[in-house]
Figure 1 (cartoon, rainbow over the protein chains, first blue to last red):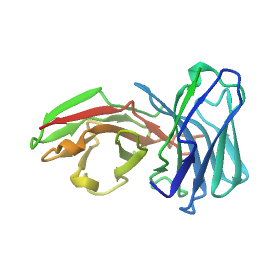
Figure 2: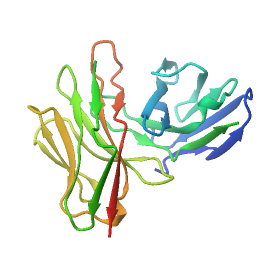
Figure 3: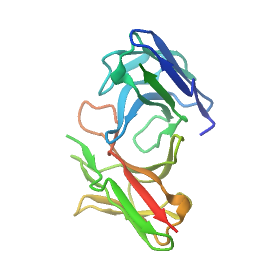
Figure 4: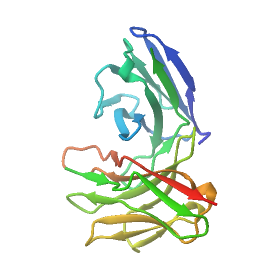
Length: 113
Length: 116
């Protein structure tokens, strides 16, 4: 979905390096999410934010941190990358409320060597 | 705990035949159910959702899903498969348990392969 963009699209980094993945959206949604996808495991929630002042840990937040710089921007950081953080990372947005679907960015493929 | 299961890792269908991708769920109240599709090297795209009302939900690209409360299922269907339907399909349920924030819980995905 072009309304949700992620940079970079691909990244190779070394163990111990700090890396930031960025997400921007033009949908005007308050809620933003970071997921990681691993083969056979589906999508797992890392962090989510319901507005600029609200940050919440998801299922697998250890080793990650986030920053909500504005309504439209939500960044994910790996403070010290390790090989088992090699995965496909997705940002998503949604409107508030239980009935609304989420809209996903194109993903960032991260490889930690 | 809320959960969703996709019992098949892969489904193989011949082009023109009907397809079904299975999903079962476990929730403590009324379920909010979603289907997403992921094409190669792309993000997830929303297909359809069940919130309330008619048990047969129609969505994008000719897909539909049938909500069955007694069987706790929400199977994705299409009457006539296309090669271009080949993709990874995810079922998701909204976690509305006490203390949750209403986030989506995703199944592990089912790879659909449609052969000419």
